[in-house]
Length: 444
Ligand code: ATP
View 1 (cartoon, rainbow, N blue to C red):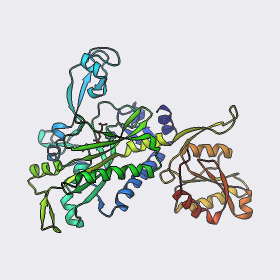
View 2 (cartoon, rainbow, N blue to C red):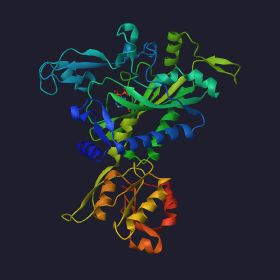
View 3 (cartoon, helix red, strand yellow):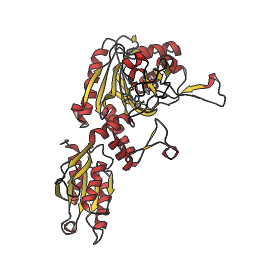
View 4 (cartoon, helix red, strand yellow):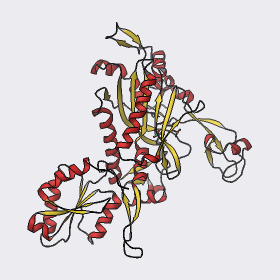
């Protein structure tokens, strides 16, 4: 993880928030490469969920919601973590994340000092709206995006004539006052979620739950993620959230071990029932194709962290490879094997030399590619070094312009993963790149 953190900073993927002031715990900034990667991951998810499914539509709800929302959802009462402190070294832990024997003996796992009693700690960030800081003005930063979907579900049925079964997808920020925020961007206080809520008829929920588990698994396969680094974890009775009937996590083998990447939850009709109760509004679905049968739908949720997906993609792509006899210059390379559809830069154009018109020709080629691809241009230093720089940034294709290019209008297309090079006519470059992106298969 240290190597990934340092590469992320060096190459402009992720910076510590407010670094010049010593950093802000639990908050991170996404640099020029990071924001591109994040946008592409979000784009891939959005496309998968909305473009590929006629029965799913999108939403972008506000972060600030009526405070009653969080009473109805159960977050005010139940969204807590058990917290213990060490009286000696002042370390703070989540009681469910330290060895049970330490908890039982009230012994700090770090220094052996005495631990406090376990107390419940609500993870929602509270603030005030308006000028008066009284209890009437309390408002929360949303701890999940899901509730924005539930409170809008009737609006969407009416405005977009949706019929059950159907889904609503949303990507947005969520905030949790996490007690422990180690492991880089894995668990942060401010993060982004990609959530889809699928509304189904009660009784069909288990079938849809299995269907969505399969679809989400297939999604990661399509992204080219190492499938032996993914596994399912079913929540036991003591892990299930207050709203859930069944829940599975997709876990990824991060450098610090297996950890949750995404949750697929059967949330039953809990949330809509509670919103009916707290708002006094009728949240029933009226099935016009079925004698106006009325019911509160069940909800199958797929809930993935966008920023946690970004960490997964970085870890999954990271590789160090010996590319020449040991002891030679540049015998190792660091390479990020991003799927070309996720890579922040798709193609880098490199003139072999700056002189003799090669730079101008390379700039022209780049200009031609800009319309369709994220491009970079680099003319500084030996060509081998420039390839390594692009490898480390995860650029899947490099185009090198040399003297032959001026004569026969061809360039060298170099592939990041295999390091193979082929000669391609400039006129066919864009088509060839599109084909390569579509046909991409990870080789290592
Ligand atoms: P945990 O038990 O690890 O705290 P959770 O089970 O509460 O997580 P969910 O409420 O199911 O997590 O959230 C759905 C997804 O949102 C998670 O799978 C994860 O990808 C992401 N997520 C949740 N909390 C955070 C966080 N603090 N930082 C980054 N991503 C998060």
